[in-house]
Image (cartoon, rainbow, N blue to C red):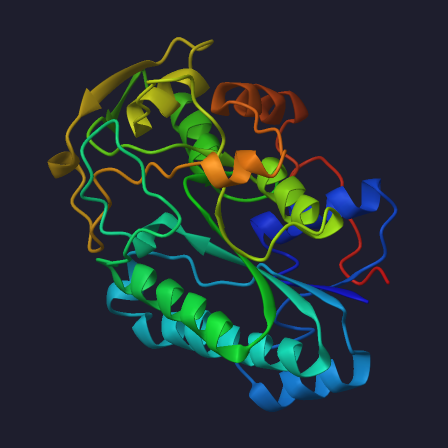
Length: 299
């Protein structure tokens, strides 16, 4: 049995559709089917169903709220919930694919440098702290695991930067977007394909980085990303520094992660421009929009 946690989320939905396309059977659970913060419920589910593979997509991702009003919930989901899933997976002999984040690093790299998989972690936000603790919980559980760090996630099935920019462009002639935060976007489809690729090809266990690729030497900022999203519109995108958008959680100056280890597996990574074009061609497939909703309880 394959289990997907967070099955209704942006990544979980993308993964469901990918597995549907490949006619792979799975059970997708969101909080109503499996509350990962409830250890007894997680243990009972694993003991009864004994999944062989777990794609752990469930996470708390409201970065700014995690700093104060939702600090406890952030920890409960990202640390306790991940520990419950990892320990239960270890007990039944399952393989765990865990999705983490660039926020586990402090972001203080010079532009042009990249974070390596084995670089020291130093999270600067509550969200980053709990995701790093989630990584450690996976390690300490003894489960067979793949931990994939990703960043700047966008996709067809959830609220994200692409849809935000498109919606704002409908009512604004100009938009200001930060030009001093550096990294790479990640299409959920590319991420889902890599998650499946690791397992299907029996790649060595451990940590990996996955974002979409960029041309050699290309520096990418949120301004660049927004400009590409809106290049075929009449909306003008203006670069500003981060002081124009004060936030509770510290954003990384440079969260660009090295893809060398991932590329060495043979997985082909499209550029972020190619990924964005394919995503836009598919359109907005969120449940409240036109598109395929899928069956969260497919077995």
